Structures are given as C-alpha cells and as structure tokens.
Image 1 (cartoon, rainbow, N blue to C red):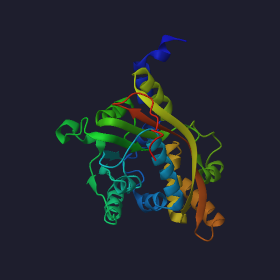
Image 2 (cartoon, rainbow, N blue to C red):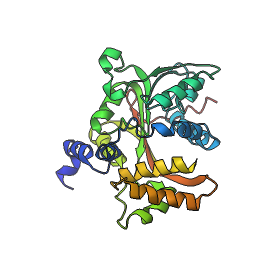
Image 3 (cartoon, rainbow, N blue to C red):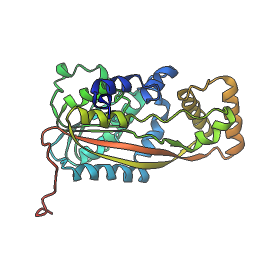
Image 4 (tube, rainbow, N blue to C red):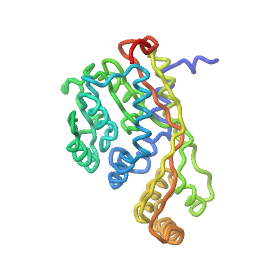
Length: 300
C-alpha cells in the first residue's frame, strides 16, 4: 500500500479533475448542470410519483429510518429537490422541509405538489445551493438532516463539505456508483459511432474514500436500481442528443438526422419505452451520534 492511497489531498484533486464525472462531462459539453434537463421536468415529476417511483423512495426512506433518522419535528434541507419526490413524503411524516431547487419548471411543479399536501409544509428556495451564503442564510449546523439525492451540487469534496456543514445529525448523499445503463442509448450508439463508450463516472469512489480519510462515521449502501421510461419520439430524440453530447459525440445535424430516422422507423406509434438505471451509492453521514445505531426492541 502506498501513501498516496491514504493522502486525502490526492483524492480531492482526482475527484475535482476527473473528466468522467458528471459535473466535468457537463462542463465540457457546454451544458449547465442545474438546467441540462429542464425540458424533462414533467417526465421527472411523473416518474417520481409513479408506483415505481414511490416504491423506490419508500425503500430509501425505510433505510434511513433503519439508521435512526426520525421525521416528526425534524428540520430537513432537501438539496436538488426536483418536484418534491422526497420533500413531500418528508413533510407528510412531520418534518419541516426546506427544498432547494433552481430549475424553474421543477420548482413550479414542486409548488403544485406542495399545494396538494393535507398536512405539513415545504419552504422553497429557488437559488442554486452553491451560490447561497450559508452563514448569511443561517444554514450552518441548522438542519437535523441534509438530503441530496442524485444532485448535481455534489461535484467535488468541497461541495460535500458544504452540505455536511449544514447538518446537525445526518447528511444523506446518493450518487452514481458506475455501471450506468440506458437502453435507448445502447440502441442508438452503434448507428452513430464505432468507438467504445467512455467509462461510467463513479463519484461514489471518491465520496467513500474521502469520508473514510477525513474521519467521518457513516453507513453506506450500493444497489442496482432500474426504472421504466416512456417518451414521445421528440422527447426521446432530445434526450439522446444530450447524452451523446455528454459522451463527447458531436451533436450535429447528421447525428440528429440519424437519430430521428431511427426513432421514426422503430417507434411508429410515437411511444418510446426503455429501461435505464444502474448502480447507485447511498451514504448517511452521522454527525452527532457516531455510534452504530440499533433499534430499541421494546418499542413497536
């Protein structure tokens, strides 16, 4: 074992400069991470509150509860809240939720969903988390749980430290753990290029290693999660074009023509259904109580 493996500064720099991370791929493609998928807001919302989406979120919430997270009266900061897929159930369970979502269409959908709440409330902050002055906002050490699920804010160790600084008890972060799968991109890829796809980004490697080296206590979980996506041909074309840009494939007119012709030929009913997902990592950093949590068997 070399000293480099145990040198946190080397891992921090490697994460910051890794060209395969989502944040760096987005920057290289010229897209804005906070707005790259604005046009998919309604699709994201539909998926979040579908039966499949609800089952997925309930598994995550159940895992958090197994680690000791309680909701009633808790203050929660949901960073990258989207349309409220987690903010809503957190509020329904009795938490006081502050949701951060800079994407205008997603934030608008979140407010619509909040309006349907029969109990609980969610406060919306439309600014990017990265640009919020945490001291002025009074967010340092202010929330029982900081929650960031698949959020573009998590782009390097500095962003992780900012999230953790807002947490009193827990900080939850989920991100990719390699092995991303996208059925539609797999169909299109050989029509566009004969080169191999670039390795999947895996922010989880850096996150776990740095949490370990920095002395944090945490619980972690790696799972394979898949979901079914249904798009119109136009929406599917736009999704594929974005994904190709992230893979550094020129999104020129010839590429668009090839993608469009394939879609129209393969999906004449204007319904494009495919599977996407892969391996994802979940980490719950324990801020206050760093001991192993165990349920009190006397409670029901």
